[in-house]
Image (cartoon, rainbow, N blue to C red):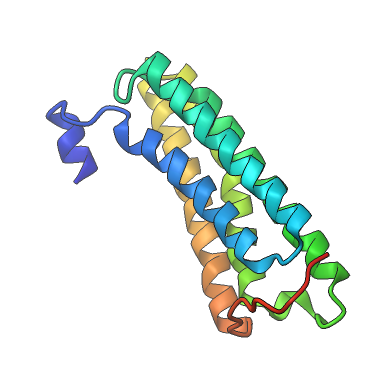
Length: 173
């Protein structure tokens, strides 16, 4: 569908720019839902604020569809990885957790961390090689491989991990 709309000139960078906002916010919000420490929740709220300000600023300066937002494609995933690290620190401090790799949420975050680390590098490379069609196609294949690996991690987590619902009484302090 996106290829069809792109060939008609109806979509340029809108989908990737909006996706670059939604994904880090979702990952941080999910990490925040598993934390009970007020300090960690405030830090993740600061991350959300930073992502929103960077995206809003870049949206005003560059427009929604004129060019890709490179700064937000770096800031959002890096803060997502930082949120995952805060989650892991809280998880290892929790005395109830015996094996964090039996938790389905860990696999969810591992998949998004893989994507968040690889995505800015690949998307920036695609931005620099917009004029080189063959390089852009090769980077698209690499990005597709990263996405497939992310979904394989999700699938393994659904198969191997225990289904855990966030509890409000758990403390990651």
